[in-house]
Image (cartoon, rainbow, N blue to C red; front, top):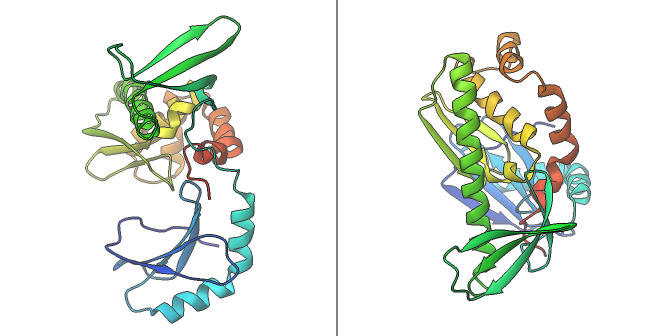
Length: 250
């Protein structure tokens, strides 16, 4: 099944579907040519995109026709791991324990305390209600630092130049490259091993020259990232687990 869908449509509707334990978000997009479905791993929701000429009845019928596929996708999602005090979180591929420590006079909002023979502590200050957001903001900043460095390295290695780098909560792709040379990445890459983040950076840099996935594109990626196959395999096997971290539990 095709699972391409835009997340920028200005016209959105929620659709109720009996027997489906997940929200269904219907998005009418002017450039859509057909009805498409996908399951958001981070929002644990069904995203149905429809052309402007389709009706909500068309959307309901399309969902009904593909309900078994949707249920299979939802059942395959890992259990959500919300940001809570005490959870074990991977950062750059290594286990860390999260601690919401409340108010602190220490200057930093978030910092890491190393412990011998135990996972390092990631200490998050402030009210517990705000701690998850603070943790996510910190992880996003760490991802931005790592990705900026690797994008710069790969761009120089290939004789290219990225105009702008954004790190955000991308739910359908690990990275993207616009025709204007703007690169965007998922903050969750900071939880993957460094060689995986490095591969995604190299992948998007290669798109600065080849806006496709043809042979010349893959030659560029392999030229600057010889270990790309291992990183791609890691993402295929573990990407869903990364998307479950920070997801909202039912």
